[in-house]
Structure formats: structure tokens, C-alpha cells
Amino acid sequence: MIVPPPFDVLAAETPAESVDVLVTWVGAATLLRYRIALGRRRERSALERRTGFLISCIALLLLLRGFSWLRPEVRWLGIVMLLPATLLPLAMTLFTEGLLRRHVPRWTKWLAVALTLTAAVTTIVFGMVHTSDARVTYLLLGALLTMMSVLGVLLARRERGSLSRSENGLVRACLLVTLISLPLVATDFRFDIGWPMSRLGTLGALLFCYTLLRRPQEHARVLWWARDVGRLLLRAGVVCMLLLVALRTAPRDLLVPLFVLATALVIAVAIVDRLAQSNASRTETALLRWLARPPATTLHGFVRELHHLPLTADALVVEQEDLVMYDYGALCAALATGRPVHSLARLREQRMAHGEGRVEAARGADQLTDLLERAEMTHVALLTREPLRLLLANIPELPGAADAELALGAVVRHGQLAVAGAR
Image (cartoon, rainbow, N blue to C red; front, side, top):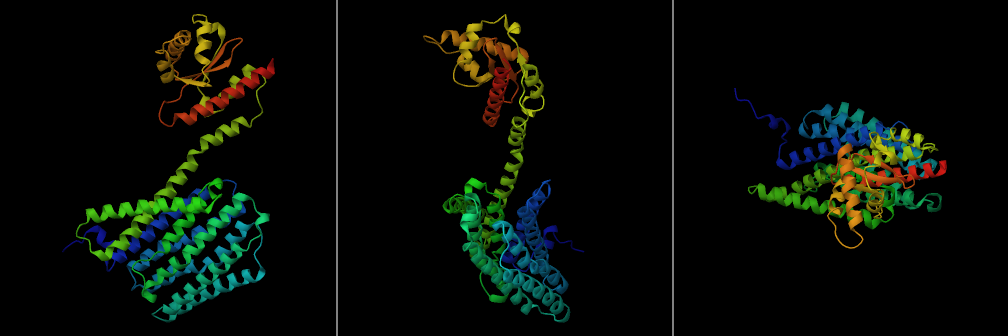
């Protein structure tokens, strides 16, 4: 008995169809990742809840249709695959209402409900009675294109004065994605319309997800969105060329499918990176939450507050009586260089400086280096000059430490205001 290779189970009838399956599953995995990120938020707005419903429908559709494309002879699988798609007219309408922060016209709601019910009933009835579902796919395609066109017109004719600048920017970007997605969605029915070489609807879903993850200030101009998408397409082109070089025997008709696969992978990686950046911003959120706490009114209270911030949980405040072995003037000269926070590496460079007016600062840098090494700390900041108080912290000196130093500078400034108010 010959055992087929494990990946033969994932192989379609042609290489191009196998690429279609891979692309749709890449899109499904990426959108599910985004949906999980939405679900982790404790307090979700109405727009986030409606976005989650829309993303869930699209992700489930992309996941199921990959199996349906692999096994087109299984009729019930094609029926199940189309069911999430029948909910898209209603889901898109609800998302548009959340985007505009107001109800769409009543006839639009009735149209969304009618298209959803018609598509769902037709899919179930025709799927159970007939062996061919060509009419169902045509009906579903018409419903999706009709609803996307109507919602696109509503977005274009919105009341711009009722929305903020960032909201208008997001609406413009979503409108542009809708216009791009209209022809892309039609290509998912290429076996029925006979064109083009690859199914491109997944790219529209990925672009939509990528647009939602952009920061509010990035929606100020549509050209910025087009520039970022252009960069992603350029990267996809480079990846496609590398794949063609590696697969020298690949036929020419795989050029377009490989470019589509590369584009899907590049956009998916960009989305995952955006999600990772949003998780990384928890450090900024923790700092802002700490700064928003009632300010300390005494030095003791400030030292106690330092332990509530992960960045300064191990920080030390060194009093003047603990610095009697060091030169007061030299320490002040080393700290008076315009930087609120000084790292150990920067102090080591500073102590090697020579020249008029720098000797005392270099001596102070040498003494601060000794202080940090004794305390096993990496950064020092001047908290107060009279009496002399220093804040010592330990931050790994890596390429990403610049933001941490900036955050530590904000903490020091907060402490200086607290101590000054206590006088």
C-alpha cells in the first residue's frame, strides 16, 4: 500500500487552485487572529461589536470555502460554506451604522434583511434539492455587490460635519477599500464567470482588516493609505520574484497565483505586526494610567508610587547623605547636560571627554558610573538639586530602550513636580 505524502490532502486539482486554498486560509487565520484581539477587550464600543460580527462572518466564510474548494464534489460542504456569506449584507449594514454613528435609512435596513433572508433561504433550499448551485452563487454574488454598492454610496454621501477628522479619514479609507473590493469579490466566482486566473476576494478582506488597524492619525490623508498599501504590494512583488527564482521550473501561468499568494502573506504579516504593536502599547497605557493617578504630595509618597509602575518597580531614590563620598559639584555638572535621564553607556562615553569646562562633568560622569555599577542600575536622573536626590533605574540598554528612557523622563518630571509642591 502506497501512503501519499501528507500535503497531498491539501492539494487541489491544479496548482492555481491550491494557491487559492492557501490564500483563503491565510486570510481566515489572519481575520480570526484579529477577531480574538477584539474579543479580549473588556470594554468594547458599538463599532467594535459590529466589527467583530462582520469579521467573524468573513473569517468563517474564508475558512469553510477553503475546504469546499478542495472538495467541490461534496455538495453539503458547499452549502455550509455559503451560509456565513448570506449574513454579510446584514453584517456590513450594521458595521456602516457603527462607522457613521447613526442609523442608515430604513429602506437600507429592509434591503439588508431582504437580501440576507433571500440568500439564506435560497442557499438552503437549492442546496438540498439540486445538485448544482450555480444559481445560488449568482444570487449571492448579486446580493453582495448590491449591498456593497449601496453602502458605498451612503458612505460617500455622509454628513462630514457630524464626524471628527479621524472618523472621516477612516470612512474615506473604508470607502476606498469597498470600491477596490467590489471587483475582487466578483473574482471569487471565477468558475462561474470564467475569469480571472486567481480568486482575489481574500485580498479585499485583508485590506479591510489592515485599514481598521491603522492609527487614527494615519487616516488624515488617503494618499498615506495608498502609499502604505503600495509598499505592501512592492514587498509582495519582491517575494514573488524570489519564489520564481527558487522555482525555476514553475510554469508561467503560476505567476499571477504566486503574486496573489505573496500579497496575501505580506498583508497578513503586516496585520499581525499591527496587532503586536497594539499589545506593545500596553507599556504606554500603563504609564498614562500611572500619570493619571492622584499625584504624590511628598517624597515618600512619590517613592511609594514608583512601585506601582512596572518600569520603575525596582527603582531607587538616593538621598544626599548617601552621596557624601562623591563630589556634589561634579555630579551636578554631569547631570546638567540637557538630558533628563542618563544611561550607563552614555556616562562612560562622557567621562572620556576632555576640554575646557568638561573636566568636572567628566569626573562627575565617572562618579555616576561608579554609583550605577555599585547599585546594579543602568540609568540615573536628577530628582532634586537642593538637597541632591537621584533616581536610579534598571532598563536593559537595547535598541528599544529610547522609548523607555523617554517614559522614565516623564516619571522624573512627575516626581519633581510632586516634591516641589510639597515644599
